[in-house]
Amino acid sequence: MIGITFPLVAFLMMSYRQFSAEKSYKEFVENESNTTDSQRQITATFIEEYEKNNENASSAIVDPFDAGDYEGSYPDNIDMTKPFAYLRIPRLDMYKPIYLDATYYHMSVGVAQVAGTSLPVGGVGKRSVIAGHRDWWGDVMFLYIHTLEKGDSVYIEREGKSLRYEVDNFQIIDPSEWEKLLPVKNEDMITLLTCEPFYPPRPYRLLVNCKRKELPEKDTISSDVEIKEDNIHANSTIRKVNTGIYLITIGLVVALVFTIVKFIRYLLGK
Image (cartoon, rainbow, N blue to C red; front, side, top):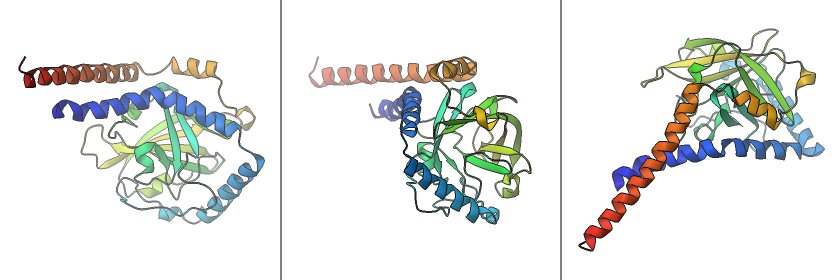
């Protein structure tokens, strides 16, 4: 029973996160649409202060996977325990909350912006680096991020706006090469950061560099119809993985129930 329960808990968590991901995303979008002007002003002030303090702080970029309990420096006028934005990647059928500061906790519950890089709000000359584990207990996270292809859409969504980026290129770097994460002149970029290679150990880092394509006036949150149309193009590998997770979860539940029934019958001498 212990042998079945241990993997069952992990697969139950994966199934729950996969099943509830889109619902959590929609709740976030709804809450963002109800944000008051005063709350938006507080966030705007936070963004302004962070970017000002970060102008000469790029040398402070730290690899989040080796940093342990490291915490970055941020203004203290917003709640850092709540998602700042949402990452949506149709090709991976992925919805992940984006937290500020890539701490151990933040990357255990979602993905996170790396301190010292731009905030995920867009802007020419900005580059927000968003870190996520290659896999994690109870979640596949960025496990299949290498299956993205040039031109695939990546969305950052917050405050009623959807910033659309396109995958441009991939890079493999050493964890110490923080200069590879610096902004590129005249480009609005996000970089998805995870460990490399696919199988552990993972001494390197994979960068998925994405460039902004849409004009600012087109930045609106996608409708349910648009989201469904986007998700039709999800990688077949991802669909198979998600289906496999659900089937394994069901199989483990059945196996546990069968084992418990058999054990009870043994105790009763039947």
